[in-house]
Length: 227
Image 1 (cartoon, rainbow, N blue to C red):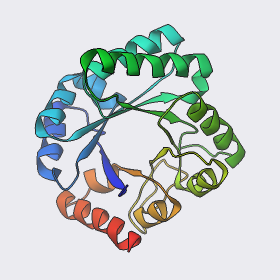
Image 2: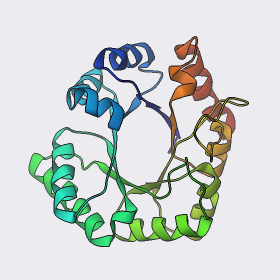
Image 3: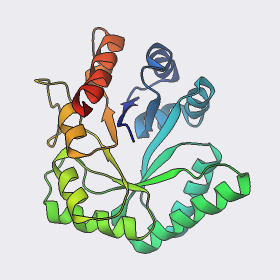
Image 4: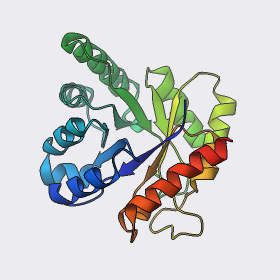
């Protein structure tokens, strides 16, 4: 599959979110809704993205007792998001409950099951490759569709794990750009070369003087790297 960029809508109002969605679609077809935006305006922003024809990556990183996470996953499935995240550290029982809930709810609604993506170690923290591998392996074996990890671990996971699964890589920066509070960052080219499927970009586009031009440039790097 062709790697794709996900724009992290890390803004604090529906108005700002709509501005970037309208300005950047269809250059960018995937938009991340995280805790900041979801807390500000709730499911309404998901409706806006879906109505535009774009895909929602619901990044709330569910982490709770299995029953609570299972119900949260059902509600998110009803919102018709493309992907959502949960912490693999929540353990096997929690992950399996989430996987069952997503499949069951999608079957009832007669819609495509959302992709469940497990968070390994946040890219704002240092991490041992062995820790990321242990978490990723557990998550995939429990039925997750993919994992979130930095570009530094992607190649290792592809080599060590012989199953097909999705890798979402956050912390994507422009070449020579600021890393901000992220420690394990990468450029678009580096992430694509390593084997990432989805590249999460936030501040490099959101804070750009010309967001559309920056989005085009970063999207263009995907095809340049694949060539």
